[in-house]
Length: 409
Image (tube, rainbow, N blue to C red):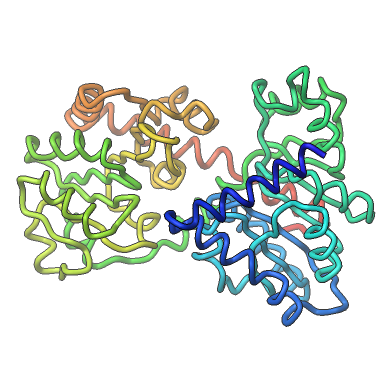
């Protein structure tokens, strides 16, 4: 079968890449230990609610659902799987699940062994996961299977003339909880009608994060009474023009949280800065108050840091794609981001409502930032638009809980 051959080749390529690439190496090593872990820790009686997230972003998307289920039905046993090391390595000790492991490669033998060991009663796939052998076997075993926060676009393989095999994969889902009306129409066009338009659970997650944001005394001392631009998940291409702008605008302060925090990247950032700068882990409240730029050289704080800004830039848009812009907008921050945002519904909608701004160059960033930072009315309007957009899109988790589990929060 061509699909299985493709998965096998992919597995071999990952192993080969692991000789040089740390992420691929972690995936290969993690795959080796899955069945030993499950043999030792999985209850032979099974009965798990299996939730699969490809990576950390998808996990965060599904997290409100996991935690609401845990709260309403604490006896529910939850199996959480990841495919990417970026999800597993960060959340392997997540207390909201009873078992956490990698998902074995989608080969028939792996699939049957995995399901035999875990014996799930239901399966939930978050957003973009459509593994053929898993979905086929779940259907064969009559295990109800759901997709949540999925979004579909016309250029996906399901809607191409040659996509018949992949369309059949989608028919294995018991129900799909999707983000928007366009997705419903696309699915209806290929005969899939077991869908509900509920929105994106990611908005519920960022709203939860805002409510539980950490107090950060060093950041508070740094930001006190100042205009603060927060640059989150930045990459070198972003940093070159952001730092140049900051160096020449002395009425603002800058918090920069780079996507990568290895020493060479931190030194690169520091080399571009011409104003007093500190790394977060080396700062105190007293020293932070006297510097102009704070470099966040640790993980886990960005979602709380946005609350101290008046304007945000979210990186990734000059590379593979923008990072989480909703995480900033939830604090009523206008968000600027790069050109690669086509796949992100929230980016298009934030632009449309006046809470988000796409730029394609350093010059465009300068013009947008100048307009917002120099015009209090423009900034206030954009801030309101960003926060209102997030608030008006929450509620997907509540709808799924009621429809799928009969849970009313």
